[in-house]
Image (cartoon, rainbow, N blue to C red):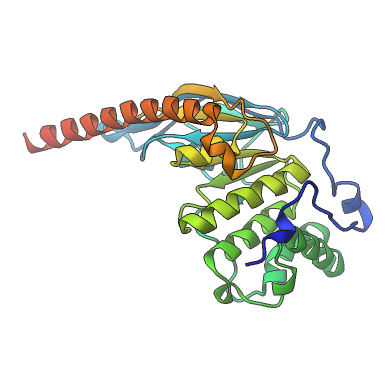
Length: 299
């Protein structure tokens, strides 16, 4: 893979025609993409079988901020993201983007899943162009928008290929390009690099930071990897064991732009230790909960 185009102090993005051109570069100070999650609770089931998976979760994310949500398995991280995406209705509380309540999925929120959810029968270009085509109705504008973002993620030479012809990392880059092609106010990422090998994952993290530095889209990033959360985020929000809730909101005081060498800095190690201790304590609570449930079921 050629990652050269994803590095360097600034990415050159071609100009775009029509109304898209005015939105091609989103200034970091621009007041769009403010995410507010207020007193969110999520429960499933009815009666005695009703189970609360997320409880009293509140989080404010400023426009252009990169926030990573970290927590033990089963704490409700992805459930929170699905509520923000509009896939799951909250049992209590509300979620807003720029003051507008979220009631359903929308183009103002781009979603990148753990597994690339590309249309296998469409080319790479057509996958990325799909959203802009639905929005503008113009195939020429949609294709030019798609080519802009494929160039941004270093895949301009693969526009005619199909997803099955790409590696896992390349497929995820297509997924990121497709999510950004609608110029969302908020980019939602659900462990997008979790299925990749360690080397590809590290390169994808660097690539994502370069893309984010160009557009400064608000990002809510779900991960179970402590180092990934610290390397990417402005803040690391740590969730506790079920029912999921925020137990810590840790600012990452590591200057940007970041490089792999930052993993060895004193600040990185300090934050890693703090996150590790929190996650370990919450994981132990989760094990105790599961053991108690098993004992009650057996008795």
